[in-house]
Image 1 (tube, rainbow, N blue to C red):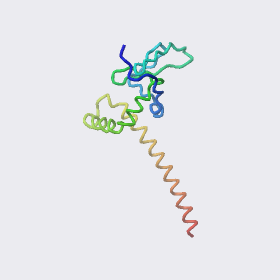
Image 2 (cartoon, rainbow, N blue to C red):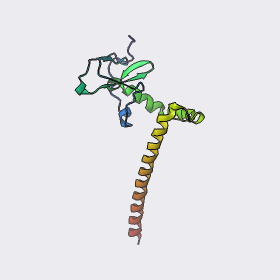
Image 3 (spheres, rainbow, N blue to C red):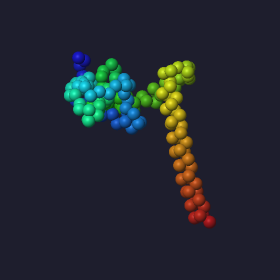
Image 4 (tube, rainbow, N blue to C red):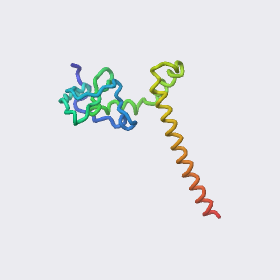
Amino acid sequence: MKKPLVKEPLGSSKLGHGFGTDWNNRGIGTLAAVTCEICGTQHPELDQNEGSRTISAFLDYQVVEECCGAIIDRVYQESGEQFAIAFIEEFANNPTASEFYILLETIKGAMKKAREKLAEVGDQVGEISRAVNTISS
């Protein structure tokens, strides 16, 4: 077993869940007993009614996101934009690669949401403009 990086749990991922998914870069959820290698906490087996734990990787350590997912949040906060730029540049060099399927689907959904948000803002600006014109008249 690896030596833990920290002495106690760092807390669950807040951002991974905030984006509508977990970070879950291993694509694993488990009910089994599992150790968070970030802090060394051993988590017991879960009952099916309790849901599952999300397992990710960080620097080749196994992360139980509900225990120490905050470590991945921290990396995202510090370097997310740089990672996104690098990933998009990689995509530009080989846009038909299967590894970019999820990116393309995510972009489609994001653009739809962005259009909706922009329409909302446009409506609000229009209402404010009408109110200002009424006051000015």
